[in-house]
Length: 88
Image 1 (cartoon, one colour):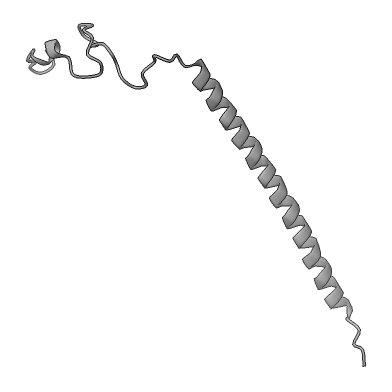
Image 2 (cartoon, one colour):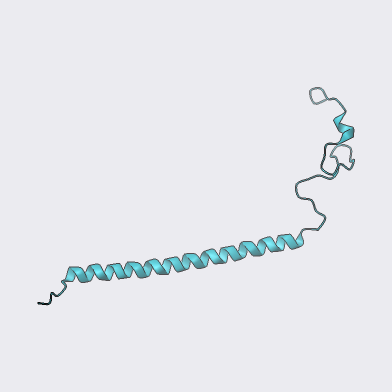
């Protein structure tokens, strides 16, 4: 004897298939958005790297801010020896 599925089983199967198709479509859209954002970030970083001068040192002062002596990022020997009391 062959059992025929009822309307509830058809409805459940239909909604499960619909959910799976929607889920796959959204995942594909999210993956495409992630790829586009990654390409844009990489392009911005490449443009910034090509526009930065080759001799530019990131985050380090080559000269002393007070006296202008070349220090190569180290403490200034001229200004270090001067004692200061209460910022004067």
